[in-house]
Length: 121
Image (cartoon, rainbow, N blue to C red; front, side, top):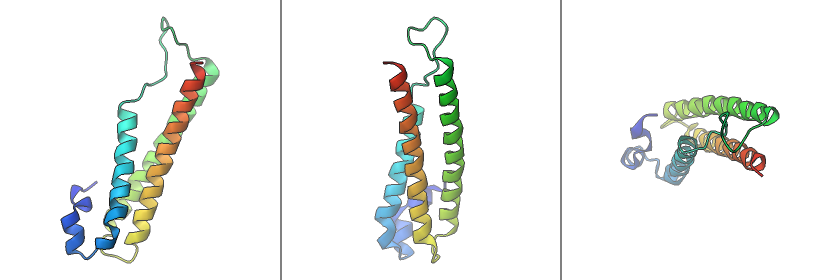
């Protein structure tokens, strides 16, 4: 993602003051998702670990991981579209799409975390 995309000065100069809050919302959601993934417990237990993940839970984790990869691809495409649509009529819709894609990724990651919590009870 081009760091200048979310540069408030660039958006103001381009006359896009009204979208600053929406851009910031997208940026925060993307950073939240990245931070959660970066600091996550993976959920795959080793042979001697006290917490075991059974075969069914492991398959569910794999499915969540595949879904996260798919959502990440969609989020990357949304950001690319956002960058391409700066100063166009489609810019507000591109922002909304990016915010939604980022929220979908966060929600999917939260669902994965819930699966891990249930497996530890």
